[in-house]
Image 1 (tube, rainbow, N blue to C red):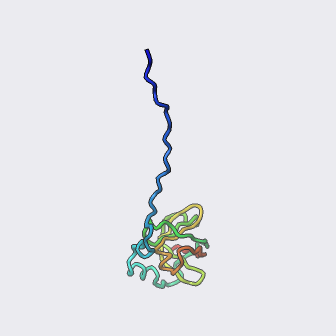
Image 2 (cartoon, rainbow, N blue to C red):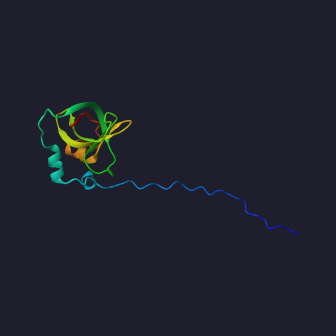
Image 3 (cartoon, rainbow, N blue to C red):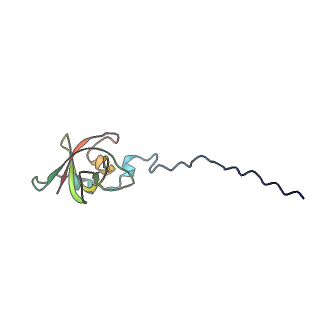
Length: 128
């Protein structure tokens, strides 16, 4: 008696599925959901004196999927309110978020500071 032959087990390897890029083809303005009023409040000049400098960091653009005005850095040990100031003196109020590795700044903060999205600016981080 003949046994039916079994087809060889061949693993089908397919090309990895490409993950969609968040906002692919969308402009920075379309991805930034902060309002004009929020940007104006964040860039308003605040009286000096109540803030303490945490240090300087070179920041890269953070994930556009994370909305709001924030900075993540190893200089920050706990969530707080603060401000980042560029070498040119432009500043924006941000949420300070603990981070590890390279520092990153939100899309909204990059735009409020007038930075190019591919820039790697050095900023001073202040905590309230």
